[in-house]
Image (cartoon, rainbow, N blue to C red; front, side, top):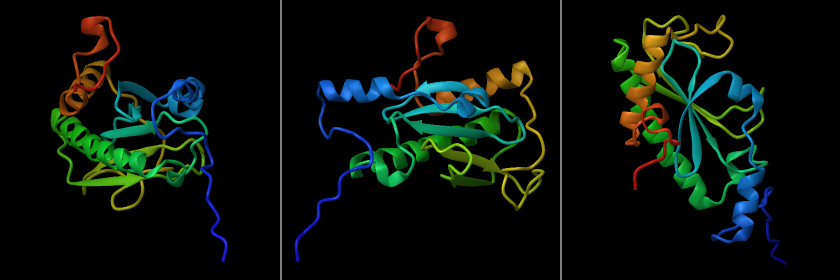
Length: 179
């Protein structure tokens, strides 16, 4: 029986090269994600964003890989990196809940992509008293905008939990993960 090599659905080089920068240059955040969230940070693999719905502490992670729609579009090392960043986002979600006086009781993680096909992971903090409990948060009414003070508290709690440098407003630079 002849062995068939499976080719990745997207062009992701396995080691740094000039092709890597070409792939990253093609990455663009889906408009639906951009308009429904606030930027938090650039992690090793993903863009981390705070979902613009104050009803739940909620971080969305978007791997910077052009054309990625499914988790199996990522090589094994990047799938492992995504899982590590999901765990880190869980800590950020818990920190957001605590900062806003609503400690998280349960973390929900989802990679749906039914409406927005770009590969992204939702990390949502849940409580038994939230409006959707115990059901899913998707499709539950209209998003509730953060008031400005809570938004700033949520962002600062998230970047502190992620171990990031100070916010761009403080430094004039993009937030990046500490080495």
